[in-house]
Length: 212
Image (cartoon, rainbow, N blue to C red; front, side):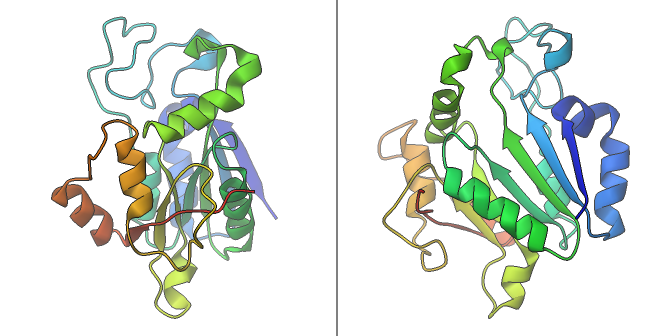
């Protein structure tokens, strides 16, 4: 088993060319990206991983460009296992993603939300910060498993949420998980038709994931 571990400054920016080459090679290698969404080692400056509107060094009035979507770029290859995780929000989904990535015979990419002192939080409550990031819709949890489509024609992608215990992810197709995520921002809000079509085009569906 081969694992490559790095931060978002490497994966999204200076090392992206090499990372993309590895993912495109089809080799059985696993990549874990610890994403703080800023350049943590140099003081918390805005980076390609920083979301639009976020305040950071060199973006004091809010970043004006969108976050680079590293996961979807890997999904476009079709044979790469891709997942976003946040241990503090859903530990069961995190463990499941690691197991599936390890089992996948080709390249895999796990992007882990990583709390950082540059976020201005109390670091002893970092896991709570991760949970809030997912519940608010800021950090989307999903798993894209190419092998799932080969096992009985299941959807290869699944959009998931924070600790949800009442439904098995392989049985749900209602979209309730995604609507609940969006509802954390605005009661009664549902995803747009364009967003639904985009997710369906990539082979994604919305599910609820049981917590640990």
